Length: 590
Image (cartoon, rainbow, N blue to C red; front, side, top):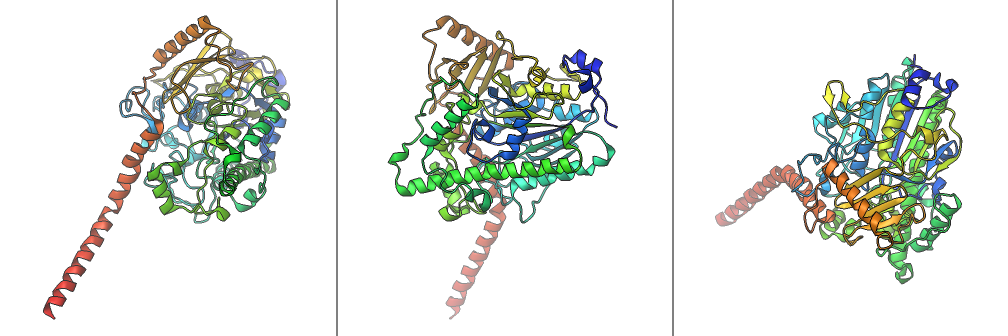
């Protein structure tokens, strides 16, 4: 039988739940992790994309309007599973974008450190079944696969992404698509779509132990909406013509709905980002391709929501739904990169994928969002994935199913991805490890439980005087009370510090560094203290994450592929040479 969450334990943990809630069983936990979704890509956050199943979770739970993650996937995933800053858990940068000067330095392994205590470990050690299906991106050596990090069953895609219809890499970054089940390389079915496959595996794992009555933790790491944008045709067709007005019109419409929903202040301003093209200046052919790309993006999100609905329906049918806590979030903001703008990637894509407009989104095709649509997906915020603007760091978070929590709630309190591990541990009645766990020393969790927000017992969990720092690939920020210190590298930023009041100006439109010089200097000091305490390394001069990714592609994608094909190429060369020799010798005899 499931362990009851005792009132005394909850009191010691500071949960403040009522006695009737304390007597309930440990809840199941379902973590739904979207990939590269912008702040307003969910219907409950102002999107025109149909996400009824995620919206239903929002209606019975709490929406977070000021939730922050890292601006790239694996640092967020590492903080989510560890409750500590990415520089303390080994993912100070992603392997794909790490400069050689940083590789191997403390905090810069590029994979989740083996000394770090994970959420899955602690749940498993306290009576939970633990499952993961989908994207992992925290290491693919034997010691760093999920089955060594607390997950009882695992079916994962190990890298930053892969094709959604076929088992092949999505870019030259990798020589193949690395999928694993447990510790063994996995072969995908001939006919699959990523979101459906990920839910299939989650349901299989949940059902495999349902009879024993133990609670479960199911982590679903979707590939939607990471590039390549691909989706079933029926989902794409729902959005035909929906984006004829262009990205500027969509960004304005999303902002209006975000204001109406109370996600941002009505009087707050919104920038038009410099990377946004003028829709009116595009040719009819360019507009048609841009529209279709956004239709595929919407269809991909729509399809993911359908699969989430299938999971929820299954949990209802098996009687598990009522005792399940759901967490939905995105790992970072929307993806602006366009591989077709990089000549080496463009050549590879031309050899491996079709961009035929009439079939875009189908198997064998490749679509991308690009910076202009990404600015609409992040509306009304500034910036997107990779960079430290709010559009890259602020994403949707919905928590639902906590016993006794008010329905259809909204909070503008600052929250952080490191807050999720202590929150879920508290809901499960498990005390934090505080740096010592099963004979090993690990970084203590720095996040704070969100339970007071969930229960409507507090307006915030982070005190106004607490400074929370952030850095990834040289793009940096520091949050303190309503203020944010921000520095972005080019091409988005000028590599200088800026100061914003996010409470009034979440769009980061008005720089306050001149008006508030004392606070500006104080926050720079706070950031310096954060960087020192967390071992943040200074980026090499001239660093560019896209250039570094191309070097990674050469080492980990191109060269391994050449080595694998070299014996065949040598064999063909030998056969060709033998054939040529035979032909010449035959001619000489005649």
